View 1 (cartoon, rainbow over the protein chains, first blue to last red):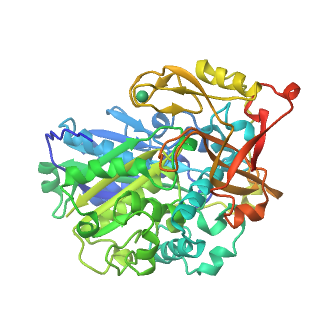
View 2: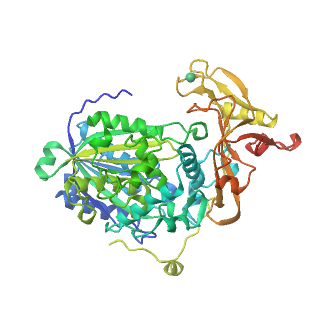
View 3: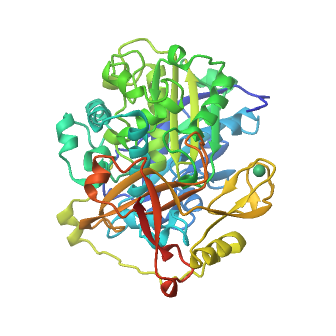
Length: 392
Length: 165
Ligand SMILES: [Zn+2]
């Protein structure tokens, strides 16, 4: 892959804010966006008048039941009368919003960007599942009556079959992330569960069971990105964005091997090249890989080339990804523990890395000193991937 | 700040049910139309790009790698290997169903186990839940079970399912 990197400005993150992630939040999407944005401005020590551009991330409109969510959310996101744009690449949206904020600044177009991601999944009746129906091919797939979980169950089973991975090994991700989430004040589903709890939970689409999967959630997240000169003026601890990568694979998921996240390898290579990372296992101190399902965290750790293909479960069992391990993974609790308001959950991962590197992650703070962190998200038909690498 | 709605509170609130009267007439396009007509004949058709050699099933009129038109129609076998299989106990509206629906992905032949991309099809499997659960069906050779010719409608459902041979 060839990426030309001609940056006008170095980009830093100088503030972030989140709402709690919960099911059936009373506030409107605009109110949620406003709450997250205000908190981010407060942490950065900026006011809305200091913000030059606004980037909004929200996955498909249909979840909230509101059309053109970029325009709709621009009110609560401080985007009125400013260059405001919305990005959406399914589940990969939250990190894509941060990447978009990054290139607004890196290009020299804006010195300050407010990045806002919001999702409200709970309004859909009888269940948000039914809204996902429209991601399937209308002619070749929809007549088979699929639901969204089918596709991930297929990927999970392929991953298990290819490398001989057992459900018990995968369930450890859910156990770890929900345990980590107990330290996260924004989390919806933190707590202590066991591998047996996962294995005894309701079977949805075998091999996916209820505790293998992240919950339906509402929530918002926001982050302030700034050019180097502004960042140094407003922050003693700016966190630098040193690498970004994003790619789409094709939509022909039944025609490519689901055992390996090729879409992610492309995005990761781009980000590593930009950040000058040659050995991700050695050079990354903390990671937030996208985990809407427990197997996805392992699958993504392999796509990120932190583990060899099929080897992530072994490293997990050895404790490498624990909060006090070599490479703490999802110390926030991830989507499995914090919740999954889609775009907001992706930006939550970026914000978690930012707080880790800043040293303000509170009870979530990993034990060892951290200097390089990575957040990643994924979406659509095993297709979209976004990666961001930050340093302090 | 954020407050959530509990189940009992949900009933005290005004719900606005809305059912859009939206119907869609999708176009199958050039490649898929021919593919569907092929299914009516009991054939699985693909398009081949002679430049890179890739066979697209389902077919495409362009090669997305070479970004040029694909060159020829090819018929692939209605047989292949099960790449993955799952059993769904929920409907698409997330209601519980007692008899699981069994579906999977088949790598159609000719293709090689080393291919990362291959002619592929997503369809129902006529196997038991046990075979899905214990993963024994993954890797098995299967063949399409076609609907009787007079019942075929040029639809993906002209194939009933794939059966282990
Ligand atoms: Zn080609």
